[in-house]
Amino acid sequence: MILVVFLIYLFVLLAVGLACTRLNRNLSDYILGGRRLGTWLTAISAQASDMSGWLFIGLPAAAYLAGFSILWVIVGLLVGIVFSWLVMAIPMRQMTEASGSLTIPDFLESRVGRGKFPAVRIVSVLIILIFYASYIAAQYIAAGKIFETIFSNVQTPWGTVSLTYHQGVLIGSIVILAYTMAGGFLAAAYTDFIQGMMMAVALIILPTIAILNLGGFGELFQAMQAANPTSLTITGGKEGMALLTGVVIGSLSWGLGYPGQPHILVNFMAIRETQKLRMSALIAIVWAILVMYGAAALGFVGLAQYGPGMTDPDQIFPLLSVANLPPWFSGVLMSAAVAAMMSTVDSQLLVAISALVEDIYVKLFGGNPEGKTALVLSRAICLALGVAAILISWRRTDVFGQVFNAWGGLASGLGPAVLMALFWKRVTSLGLVAGMVFGTVAIHIWGDSLTVIFFAGLFLIWLFGQIFPRKI
Image (cartoon, rainbow, N blue to C red; front, side):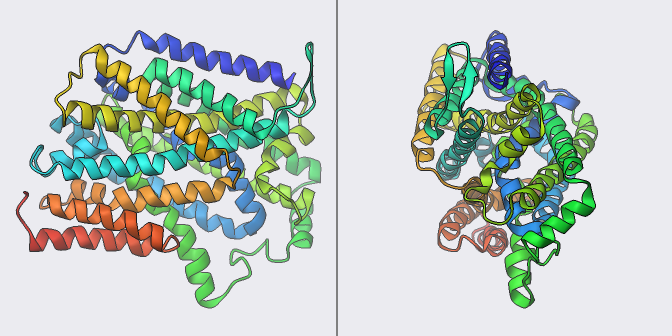
C-alpha cells in the first residue's frame, strides 16, 4: 500500500510538470514564471523550497541529538524568515523588475552597471554552482535514506521489493529532473505548493499521534530525561563561552543564510503584485512555525522511543511513520517527506540553470533568450547538474551537516552582497567581488564562524566602497 500511494504521488508530479510545459514560451517564463505567481503560491512555494529534505530528515536528527537546545536553531531560522519577507521581499521585487533582472547575478551586476565589470556576474554564478551541487546532493541523500527505510521488504504483486540507499538516490533524482526539465519555474512553483501543504499536514499529524501513543507530553519528557539528562534544557549541557558561541550564536547564525539563498529570493521576484507580499509573508511565517516545531517534536519522540544509541538518527521520521500509522497513511507521509526534498531541488536546479543560461549564454555571449536554443541549453544544464549531485551524494553522509555546509557557503558568499546591493546606493563592483570572494574562501577555512564571516563581508563591501567609490 505504501508503494502504491507513493507511485500515485510521483505520477501527479510528472503530470504537473508536463502540463506546465506549454506555458514556457521563452526563457523568462522558464526561469521566473513570467512574474505571475499569486499570494498563496508565492508563500508556500518559497518556504517549501527553503526547508528541503532537511526538515524531515536533518532537523529531527538534530533535535534527537540536541534536545531542547535545537530551539535556538529554530529561532534563528524564524528570524531569518521574518527578515527576508518583511524587509527584503518588496525591494527585491521592485528593483529586479525595474532593472529587468531575471537572476540574482544579473541583479547584482545591474546595481553597479551592466557590462562594466563582468567579474560580479561570473563570481556570483560560480558561487551558486559550487554550493548548489552540494545542496542538491543533500536532498538526494535524504531521498536515499527515506527509500531505504520505507521500501524494505515491501510486498507487491510482482514479489518483494527492497530498495537500497543508492537506488533511492537514483529514483528521487530521476523524478525531479524529469518534471523540472519539462515544466521549468511554474512546474516547480505548482509542485512546491502541493508539496508544501503535504509537508504541513505530515508534520502536524505524525508528531501528535506519536506523542499520544507514548502517553502524552508527561511521558515524553520523562523518557527524554531518562535517555539524555540534558535533553530538556536549552543549554544542551553547556555553559559559559561554549554555550554562547557553540549553542546560541552558532544556532542563531542559521538565520543569516536567508539573504544568500537564490532559490528563496526568486519567489519574491516572481510574485504578480508587490502589495500581495505582506499576506504571503504572514502565510509563510505561520507555515514555517508549524513545520519546524513539528519536525523538532519528531526528534524528541525519537529520543524517547528509541533511546540515545541510534546508529543513524536521520531515519527517525520514516521509522516513526511506519511504527505509528497504517500503511496507506504512512505512504502519504513518506510522499510528503520526499516532497520536501523535491521542492528544494527543483528550485535550486532552476536557479543554477538561469545562472548559466541567462547570465553567461545570454548576457555575456549575446545568446537569444527568446529562441529555442536557450530552452534546450537550460534542460541540458539541468541534467548535467543533477548528475553531478548524484555523484556527490553517492557517498552516504548526514543530511544536517551537508545542508549546513551548503547553506553557510551561500550565506557568506552571496548574502552580504545581496543585502548591500538592495540597501546601499553606493555599492561598487570591486566591493561586491571582494565581499563574495572573501565569504566563499573564509567559510571553507572557518566553517564554524558564519556570523563573523557574514558581518566581515558586509564591512568589506562597505570599506571598498569608501576606498574605491567609482563603479568601474
